[in-house]
Structure formats: structure tokens, C-alpha cells
Length: 96
Image (cartoon, rainbow, N blue to C red; front, side):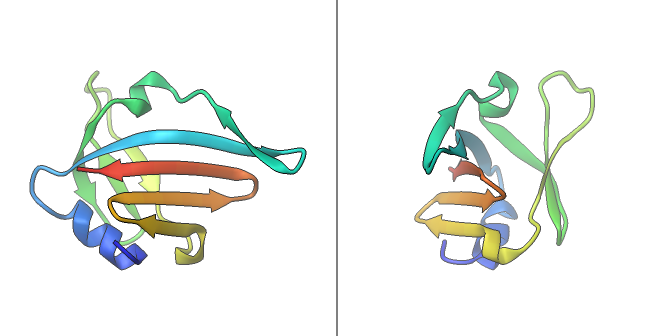
């Protein structure tokens, strides 16, 4: 994946699994790892894909977990890894 469009195409595939692998905040001039909610760190399947967001299935069936794409400039890509960075927050996802 090289672009947000590639990321969306990858999410549109059959049986796509995505996992939130890293959460960091920018403090005192450096990126500091933060704990990830265990429910978000588990591998999740895509339930619905829209132009501005993707919804994931949740284990407790209480609804869907949404990831909004916002601006393409907030995203960086490396292989099967997508990283969102904005306002001192960096979130990393892996697609399998």
C-alpha cells in the first residue's frame, strides 16, 4: 500500500483482518508508546466500508467500531502497515 486509496482497496477485499498494533502520543519532543484498548488490539473483520470510514465487527455485538479516514495527508503507508498521525497522536494498523 502506498496511498489512502490503496488502503481502502485493501480493506474492500474478502475476509480482510485489521489489527491496531501501536498507539503513541507526542510528549516532550518524542513519541511515547501508550496502552491500546484490548478490544481494539484484537484482529477485527471489516463490516462496512464507506468513502470516509470503515466499520469493524465487534465481539460483543453491541454495534460497530468505526475508523474515520479524515485527510489523506494524515496517513502514511509501508507494506501492509498504515499509520495515522495528527495532533500529537499516532495510531498504527496492520492488514492481513
